[in-house]
Length: 547
Ligand code: TEU
Ligand code: CA
Image (cartoon, rainbow, N blue to C red; front, side, top):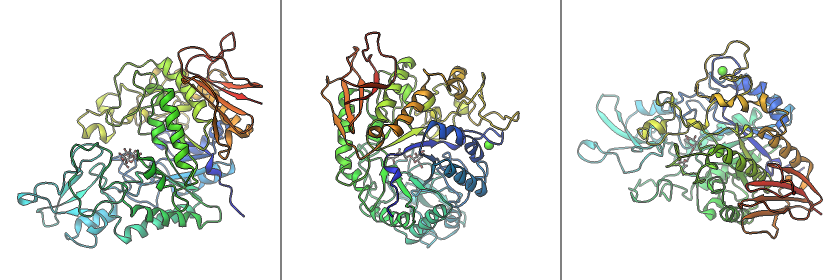
């Protein structure tokens, strides 16, 4: 029997574990907290949850520095707690995806510790990229590569005999040494990890930094004028596809196939689509859509391009507006420049949160109406904005420190969720009276009106908009089914208007004036009320039943 390819049009909710819900009152979100909120997630109507890394980690990069791939981070819980969470989610029909980080581990990982103790050119060091330095005494890094978090991508070690020694490569923080994927032992170890979690019932993995695993073994200098992200000679090398073919075979070896979806930051859509060939990943994030301006022509172009490049490989498109790395879209859409850029997060620019919220509501109806999978980042269903005024001493993101504060980093989208009550920490802890201060104690007081409690049953709230849209995705087959292609309808250039299936249509008005709706049988949902004359206002979207 062919297993139900549920992931082709699933709505996946991203749980940023340490900021979702704290089950034991220590101020850090955890697995128990998630389990206690499964009812909330089921009622919201999501099909799957993706948990950011929850494995033992010194948290130099919020869990993306893993010291043990087959255990649970103690501050998040235990293996038993994970089993209970997976079981509880499955009882409610919610799949559970974990986050695997193959490019690098923690410098506390036993393999890296062993490598540090071993000789240069030893088998232990060949798990990583150790190289002698350049210049007199080897005092200069082996090449000019820069870390994504700022500063050189190399750190020098002290050899066991106390002398200054080799350098190791880290595309991210120094606490995140890059694995050497040329080494078959590294490959075998990751297959073991995949099986470990699949055997425990995990339904799939989000693959972190999926396109940067392979490096040119000659480690050539880079053109310093090439952009920070790509093209890099080490980025997206051909051999990388073998790895994902192997992973796909593992995933498909289960009766109920497991899902692999990649974080593939590649702007070139042809190279991007290679990762989605039938024997590779099932899906990958659509970052061009996430980064796109709130602009009708740009959005139409990126939607068309997405559909065009997914079709030949047979993979479903994905749609995503926010995640734990980017500025929350309520804030982005409330600025003059509505795009997203890693190197310029736009912090401190004027923001009109009312406009950003209005557009975010319309964007929710847009992305949830597009054919394919949708990824929802915790808090966007509450309309949360980026917290930009985090004091320097509370900032935790290595991006902030490594750029000397030039880049504010990602803490502003990682603030703990507000659940209830009139004051911070807004019920973030579920453990009764025991409420330690959250690990990032920067919830704005204004979130009083944005708690789950305040929004439930308020028909005008963001939460109710999401709940209604997700319910309609289930009951109106046109919106939900990925197999129904998108067909543009005639409209003004500044309006995105398309049909899904036989009876569903979505209209988004990005023009400055209210517009008439196309002929329809019923208005199913609107992001803001229609005008008295029944027109769709500017920056609003409507879901229609059409004949
Ligand atoms: O992010 C990778 C990432 O954000 C990209 O910026 C990276 O620069 C890209 O691969 C360039 O092509 C992931 C996680 O989402 C993030 O939270 C982690 O900090 C990072 O990997 C390191 O694990
Ligand atoms: Ca906790």
